[in-house]
Length: 466
Image 1 (cartoon, one colour):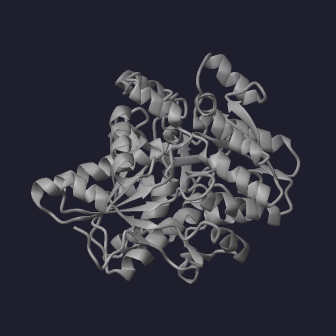
Image 2: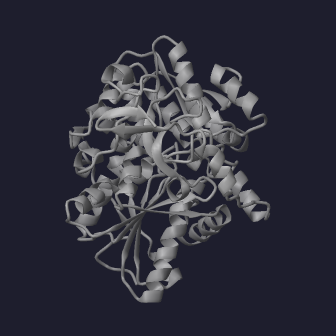
Image 3: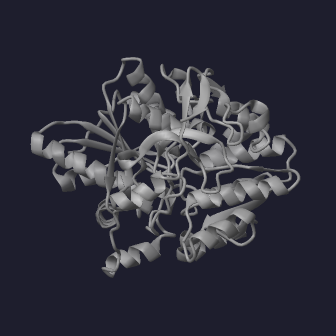
């Protein structure tokens, strides 16, 4: 039944948009472990970080004390082209399920990139331009991040070089062409254009790539070009910081109507959208002001939180990036070519990994065909064709709503609808034709990845190999 006090879509005014990003790490009592230099195994310094990242982004990455970081006016003005994004009450889905649960979703697909990735892309491009750089390099999985970054770089007149996971590059030619339309150079990864790409191809002939591979290539490429820096769309704290606009807008909208979530759900690959969505609500939980469950949903084919280990590991397959303590399957884990390219990363952002380790966040994994079944169901009822990544959250949101039907509990569920699936029709075709397969790595498969994790620990502030 429709609640006359709460509309289908809750829109904020431009004046209600957040003026600052919220730094989740600054509110955590036990902070994530520091990033380590892959050569010295010492905590990364600002000088070292700024050799890879833009200077201001490196500062944001290492900042675990500043709770609120002002959003520059130029970024906020760009946000106004597509933000605030709507918080939608899924009345039709509730009715179809016959559930007493109240379901809300934050829809981030109402921009040309089709996803939440633009929130951080425009910020990173802005800081690159402010630093006087010529361009940036990056990786992309499903293509949302590469698309968003190409748009942002075009806006600030920066060169953009993208290494796209080969499996997605081949499955999504239209996504690739959108990037090229905005001026980006797109290369399938692993490629033969970098030393690390050639090594990976030799070791894993015929592989379809991974985010870890593409990251290595993008970092190497940036290091060989004068006036370039590497930027990324997930995993690190700077990205979660920028994505906090998702959660901040959600909280402002829910507060307008006196609504508090009982369950917050998001898909999890590297962790950017989930981290951004949960930030203000997790802060309330940490401070004892909100009793809420947080659920990270990942694919069974790449289960870093649900089957990985919490350890220091390289963030990339080529082992050239900083080492992070995170839930990981091992930097050498080569994920299968599933149809949620944005969730094919061997690790999870250190921030979410630490929250999961502390028991403040749950994690679950789902099979590919279940995800597409939920996606189709949602599309037919709510009228939005969701991205495969987003559909992981949809699947578990539906499951939780059905549990409420069985128990009679009137819980409020919030999930992130991170983007649209119009460039994913190849995957939808495979599902409809019955040719989509589910893959779950065996313990032996995972063991091969775990064997590549370096044996590193922090001992009273000092880094040791163990």
